[in-house]
Length: 438
Image (cartoon, rainbow, N blue to C red; front, side, top):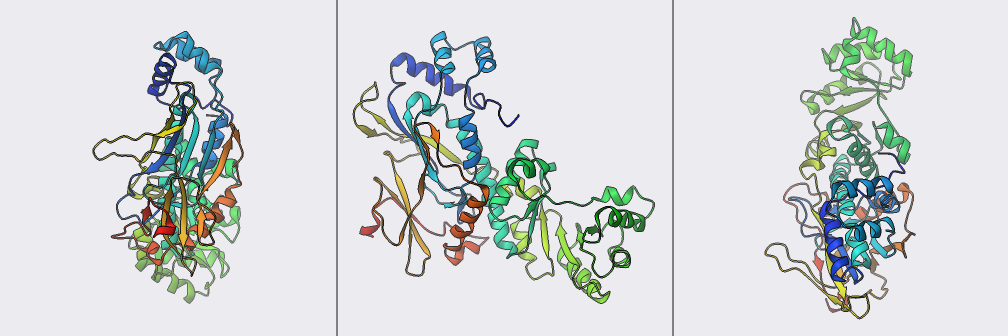
C-alpha cells in the first residue's frame, strides 16, 4: 500500500451495512460520541502506551471512497445506490480528541473520542481499532523492554517475524517508546528512525573461513562494525575479531546459548585482549523478562525481534470503540444523551468523558480520573485529552520525536512499581469521579 493510497476499504463490511440501515431509518445524521478504551490491561501489565495516533491521522486524511473503491463495492453487491452516493461524497467533518501519542493509559482511559454524525463516525471504528490495537500493543511491550534494559540501547529487529507492513508500524512503535534504532529500512525512510544492521550467520558461512568473513566485513563497514562471534567457537571468534579489528573494534554480537554466561566470558576475554571499549551486543529470543535477567551481565546493548513484533504475548491492546452518547433528535438536534451497553462482561459507561492524571506533591502520578465534563485547571491535575481533529481538519499532528519525549515524561511520573514485570496490576487506579471529592 502506497503512502497516499485510499484507506477507506481498510474496514469491515458491517460498518457499511450499518450506514445503509441508518440512512434508511433516518438515524445517520444523529450527533454521536464514540470513545475508544481498554476494559483491562493484559495480564501482568501495569500500564499501556498509546501509539498509532500519527498513523491514524494519516489514514483519516486518506479515508476517501475513490472510484476504484466504489466500483468494487458496487460489484460486490449489497449496498444500494443511495449508500454508494453517500460514500462517494464522504468526508469526515467532526472532531476528534485523544491522549497524546506516547502517553500511558489505564483501564477505562478514553484514549480517543470521536464526535460527529453517526454515519461519518461509525465508519472510523475498524481503521482506528486496527491501528491503535496493533501499535499500542507493540509500544506497551517495547516500553517494558526499554525499562528492563536500564538505559542500554535497544535495536528493533523483528521484520522477519511479522507481516511486512506490520513490521514498519512495529518499528515506529518501538522507537516511540525508547528503542534506539531499527533494522527496517522502510521504517527508516518513512519515519526517520535510525537504522542499524551488520551481518547474519549466513555471511560467515558463505566464506571459506570465519577469518575471511571478518576481514571482508571490516573492509566493507570499517572498524566500528559489530562482528557476529557465535557461528562456531565463541572464544576463537573473539580472538580473531580483536586480532583483525584491533583494540578499537566496535563490537561483537552473541546470539545463542546462555547469553548471560557468554556475555561475561566475552567481556573478560575482550578486556584481556586489550579491547576494553569493544561493545558486547546480545540478541536471540529476548523479551522484557530475559532482558531484566541480563541486567547484571556486561551487555552494552540488545537486539529484540519476535517478542517485540508480537507484543510479547499480548499482540493486541484489546481496545474497543463504543458509542457513548447520541442526540435526542434524529436530524442531529437536541441534547446529547448518554447510551451504554449492559452486556455481561462487556459493559460500557455512557456519556462523553474527559480525563486527567493527578500528581502528588513529588510529581508522581497517583490516580487517573475520568470526568463527565472538562475538568478545571489545577496545579496537580494534568489534562490528558488533546484536540486531534477540528471540523474534519487534522490539527494535532506532531513529529515522532515529540511523542517519544512525551513517553519519557509519562514513564518518569509513574510510581516505582512501573518497573515490576511480574504480578503487576495497574500502577495507578482509574476513578470515575471528581478528584476534588477524593
